[in-house]
Length: 252
Image 1: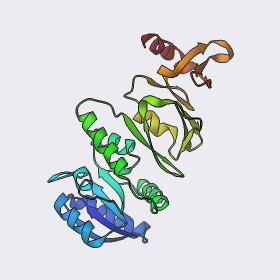
Image 2: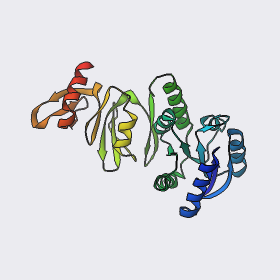
Image 3: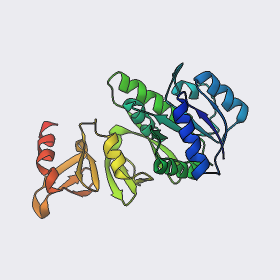
Image 4: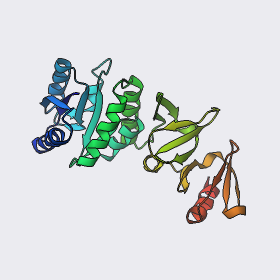
């Protein structure tokens, strides 16, 4: 797998190269650069299958680089130190990232994910969701769309149409309004709990359930307490979340 690194911090670049050479010899770094201009030229010239892309570069945010390509023929792993908004945007676009300092285990997970997705292109919609999310967060607005990575490809859904999420081991099932079939994604529910934390209408009510409170039909006290959703589903409520749940339902 040919890779290009676009990273302006020499220490971070050297660490990434070291981790790759020692643990992932199938990844061959063919070139590296330290800014958007160099990155664009290197990608054009080497046509890599994978690009490690630092989010914040001396001449701008790396997201700007993606806009220069009409068709992305490579996978991306973003690298960041602390940009919370950028991480949220990446997650909503169903893309991957590494936090600095890069950890061996996290790099392995990211490369495993990339390997599974090599035959899929990163779509223009994914990039647009990423950019839209970044702009919205910068203006204190929440993202309106989310990209969901499934075994069949990437699906794009409106956040307001999501009824509930249910954990299935390392996968998460989305129930979406006006859709008869749920969507099974390849991320665990914990990651989505973090993504939806800013949305007041979304709440974790059980270790396996995250619900959109706007789709709650009623709360039933029997059997330890459970919700009946507008799609007819019954969702168990853990005792630890019950009081907060009732307060938030009364606030809506």
